[in-house]
Length: 147
Image (cartoon, rainbow, N blue to C red):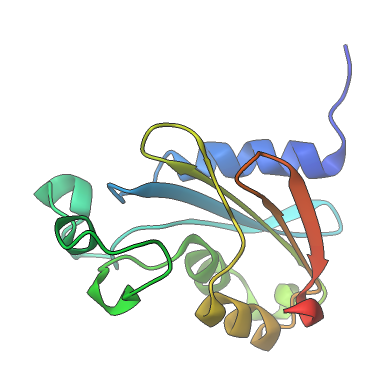
């Protein structure tokens, strides 16, 4: 048996967290890790108590054919990274790593690179490292200061 490296292990957990996502277009999972211990998880979906796209069966961005990365104000979802940071103890965020994995509706990899808003939140939370899968499934590691 071959044990996965830490990054692969945590990315696999992100894939599982993403299965809870409620978006019709893409499912993302994020976990925050400090000293190889999971601090918090998050997936993309509507705010607590609001209707989810998978429940209503409609997505305004799909209906309007909005490209990825544009017109976020039309989306009812909170991003996986945002939910992970909201769910975390703020004291445990400083110096922690955030892992992000995403899949398109057809199951192919979606880049987990954070959007501009999430990048600002990651910096503000003082997370040290961002690790995500790109569209080819490769693991990318970047300092949060590189964004």
